Length: 247
Ligand SMILES: [Zn+2]
Image (cartoon, rainbow, N blue to C red):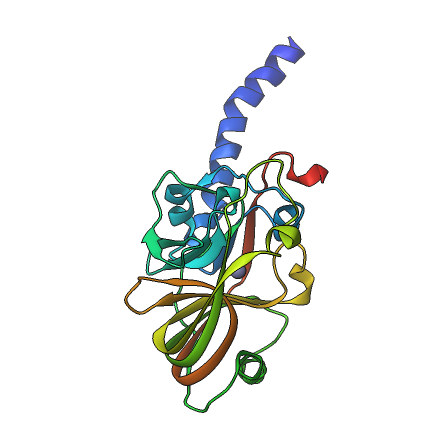
C-alpha cells in the first residue's frame, strides 16, 4: 500500500516538477552569440576528413563562419547565410544543402564593435592592431574584414581519398592563388589560447571575393581600405563526430 502511494505521488508530482523545469531552462538556440562547431580541429588534424553535419544543419546554427568539406574538398566560407565552397581550382560556388563537413565553425554575426583600417598593413600587423582594439584576449570573437586589399594570397586543399593522411601531410601540396587590388570579405575568428585543439587559437580567416566568384584560406594579405566588424562570442557548442574522440 505504501509503495502504491509513493508511485501515485510520483505520478502526480513528477510531471508538475518536470513541467516547471522545462519552463525555467533557457533555450540554448536563442543565444545568437554562440559559436557552433562541427567536430574539432584536432580531429581534422589526424585525418578525420568525413563528418556527418550537413550544410542544411550548419545553417541552423549560424550565418557566418568557415570550415572545410568532406574529403577535404575545398575551403568553406559562410557569409550572410550563404555557404560557399572553394575547391582547388579557386572558383567559389554555393555548397549543396546535403554536402557534409568534417570541421566547421559558425555563429550568427551581429557586430558589437566596428573600426576602419586605412593604412597599409600585412596580415600579421593587422592582427596585432586588432589585438589592441579587442576588449580582452580571453574571449572568442567572430571577425568580418571587408573592403579593398592591396594583395592577397589564399589556398585551397586538394580533395583527398581514404586512407586519409594527416592534415599537415594533405596540405604539403595545395593550390595557391595570389591577387592584387582585390575587394571582398575575410570571414573568420580570433580564439583564445584555451581553445587550441578544439579549434585554431589566434586568428583564422577565409576570403570570399566581392563578386563571390573565388576565395580560399588566407595565407597572406596587404590591407588597403577596410572595415573590421567584431562580434563577441560567449558560448561554445560542439557536435562531436563519432569515433573522433578515440584518436
Ligand atoms: Zn582555414
